[in-house]
Structures are given as C-alpha cells and as structure tokens.
Amino acid sequence: MIKPYELIRIIEKNDNIILLDTREPDEYKVSHIRNALHVGYESFNISIVAGIPKDAVIVAYCSIGYRSERVGEKLIRAGYVNTMNLYGGIFEWINNGYPVIDPDNKTTQRIHPYNKKWGKWLEKGIKTYE
Image (cartoon, rainbow, N blue to C red; front, side, top):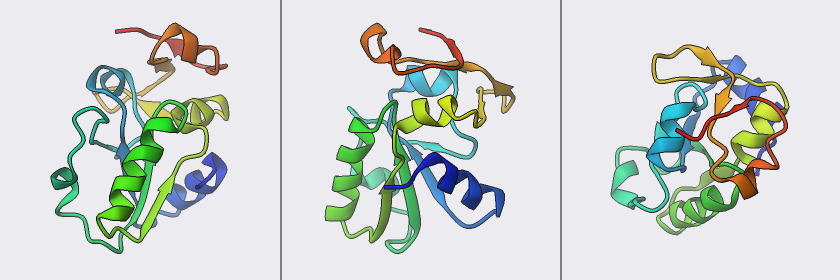
C-alpha cells in the first residue's frame, strides 16, 4: 500500500512508476491521475500488462481501493514483485487536493464517484456521473 502523499512525491521526482487505473471506462474518461494506464476491473486481463517488466514499480488505484486491491493480487500472482495499492484510491487522492486530468490532459475538478453510495467518501471535487 502507498498513501497519496507518498505517491505524489514519487511522481514529482519523475521516478519511474507505472500507474494502473482499475476503474471502468466511464469513470476513467471523466478524470484520472496523469499518465495512468486504464486497465479496468471487470475486463481486466493479465495480458493487458504483458509489456510491463515484472520488477517495475506499479501502483494500482480505483475509487476507494477495493477493485485495485483485487487487480493487485492478480498482478502479484502473475509475478509482478513491486505492486502497490493506492490507499483510499482516487477519492483519497482528490480529497488531499492532488490533481487529476480529463481526456484532453487538462487539470479538472470533475471526478466520477462510481455510484451515490460510494460517492459519500468523495469530499472534494465535482461529482460527475457521465
């Protein structure tokens, strides 16, 4: 597990890290962490990450951490040795004031809350159900 403040430090240093967004396409299209690769959850298949070295530093995230934890477990079983889950997911990221981007690579405050029940954990940002 990695906390948002730890991840932002790594990103700011331009350290080599691979971010995997395990949310569904409609969530990713609203906003995501810059340079995150969309791998999905329902449609996730280990072949999606076949080109990533097994020793790469990988951080997976979703809305609050459940889906990314499951994907992380699959990565570990497949031999990826430096896999972490973002604590609190993109919600915790946003709640701490860290940036997300839209499909045009522009910083945005919009965030897909997954559903109204989970959206209660999203304290900042503009909830967008598109």
